[in-house]
Length: 269
Image 1 (cartoon, rainbow, N blue to C red):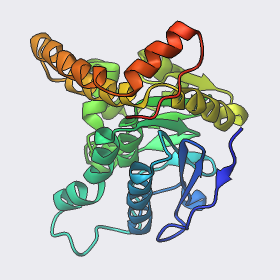
Image 2 (cartoon, rainbow, N blue to C red; image 1 turned 45 degrees about the horizontal axis):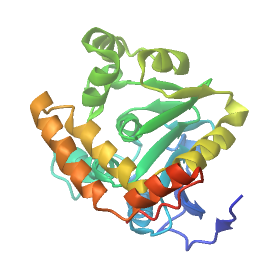
Image 3 (cartoon, helix red, strand yellow; image 1 turned 30 degrees about the horizontal axis):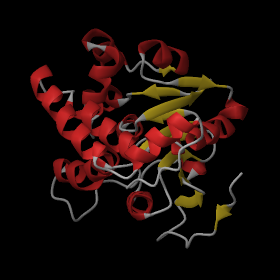
Image 4 (tube, rainbow, N blue to C red; image 1 turned 60 degrees about the horizontal axis):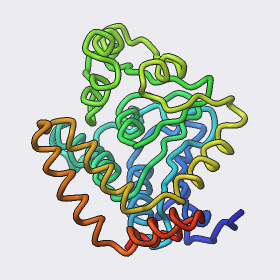
């Protein structure tokens, strides 16, 4: 078992960041406010995402929340930041970059949803590559209650997870989707008992960190491209990526380990 490393604190303590071997752990840390996203949390989360991306040690990133929930969404008590003239600018400049950072990252992200996951922060969670939910967790689109629509890319993720009718139902009626429903729909990869969630997620992250980093990187790129690409385009992209991987140092190491019936020592090179 690896030992957690001491890491310099972020710009503020609304988000915590630490590294445990090859795992980066990002924890939203406003439990009294159900980890609602305010300006401080967005700034600290952006910094944490940058640290994980730029860390040579980190291969897998866990994103979770402190307390009873992952996040209640945007902190409505804060209001819109005065540097933005419109709410459109607020969404595109404050939240879209968080979703983009996870979606475009070369590293695999696991969302460990420990409770309520709502509003714009639901889009942040759904942008992760794996989603593991506590049994009491749920995702929730509360926007119609205040005469708004989902934002941050949430509708894009919801449509692909649930299909049109279920996604519309969830938005229009403000219905909470339980962890089991998310699992049954293929959105969640696993549902764990609440008190076992963190341990199970870390165990899964450790196992994933032993896989070939370049394979994970390019598999992520392929699957995300496949959302909008044709079969012909994705087949060509697969061929391009396969060539890149075949030229890596990890490929002959993987073959040698397979033939020698030993664990490979992948370097991500």
